[in-house]
Image (cartoon, rainbow, N blue to C red; front, top):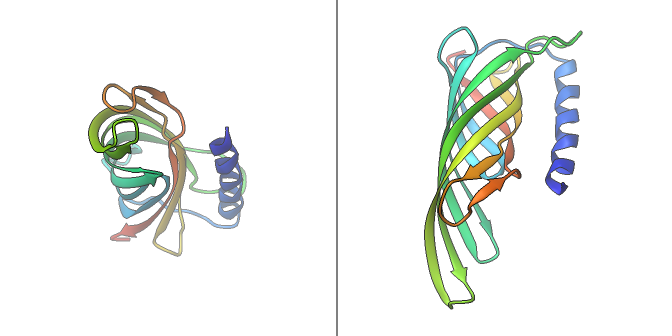
Amino acid sequence: MKRLLFFLPLLFSFMLITDSATAQEYRTAVGARLGYPLSLSLKHFLNDSGHAVEASVGTRGWGDGRYINISAGYQVHNLLDIDGVEGLYWYYGAGGSLFLWNFNDSSVDNNNSAASVGVQGYLGLDYAFEDVPVNISVDWVPTFFINGYRNGFRPGYGNVGIRYILGQ
C-alpha cells in the first residue's frame, strides 16, 4: 500500500506535465527506470501498430543484500483519448525476468546467493515530448516468482522511466 501511495502522486504529476505539452511517436529510446528496481532501459517499437519490446538491467539493495535483474517484456500501446492531451498512450504487456540474489543469511552466518525466475505484467502510461527527444513513462510491474529466493506473487514492482529518444 505504501508503494501505491508513492506512485499515485507521480501519476498525477505525470498527467499535469502532459496537459501542457504535445507528444509525438518514437521508434527507439534508451534511458533509466527509476524505482523498484533502478534499471537501465531500452524500448523499441516493432511496427506502427504500437507493439514494443523493452529490455532492462537493474539492481536494488536492502539491509544485508542486493539483487541484479535482467528483464524483457512485450508491450501493446494504445492512444489514451483525453481532451487537451495529445500523444499520451497507455500500455499493457507481459515479460520475464531473471533475478540474481546475494544476501547475508543471519540464521546461518554466511553469505548466500540464489537465482529466481519471474513472470511479469506491465500496466502503464507513456509520453514523448514534441520539442525535446525525451520519453517519460510510469508503470506497475507485478511479478510472480516461479522459483528460487522469492516464491509467489509480489505486487510492489514498478518505475518511472526517463528515456532519450534515438534518431528523432
